[in-house]
View (cartoon, helix red, strand yellow):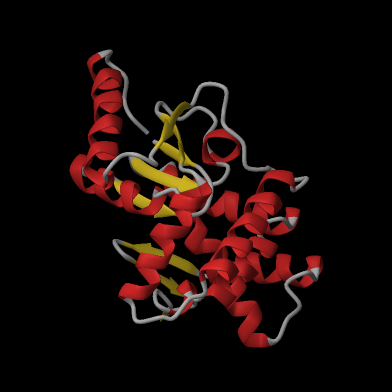
Length: 220
């Protein structure tokens, strides 16, 4: 199953819940890009250095587990969730060499098991033949509100205007990048999560999955 959409639309939360309900493997592709960005920031590498960033992406040993991620043997689950790393990941994700390296890793994981994979180009590039494709969206104001609540729950003081500007810039960067821009796959089902609860979005997608299973398809 492929779930695409902009930052803050609820992809990670919904994908985790769906994977749990279906017994599938949850793959957070955004976390993979964040891990590469974290490695670059720690080394003082310019995230715009295409050659060096491709080398890091190819060399990165990334292991995913339910609710966590390891980079080169270190649990970096908490470290990759800072605004600095998120901004770096958005810049890293526009680099063709990095995307090729990550797509290869993602496909390798997806070919071994039934997965719920979420990101920006899963239904269009990584798994264009996925049986279920969802484009999960939400209005910018709602996405900012959700992220603020998330950060405040962690005890982080985040400026609303700064977060809004940052998210708007990420939207622009993701949708206009030359390589695999954020876009809805022609056969993806569009779902605006703005007015719905997490439970309502989850049930709506499960209905779609059940319909595909009823039709005798194996969900990937």
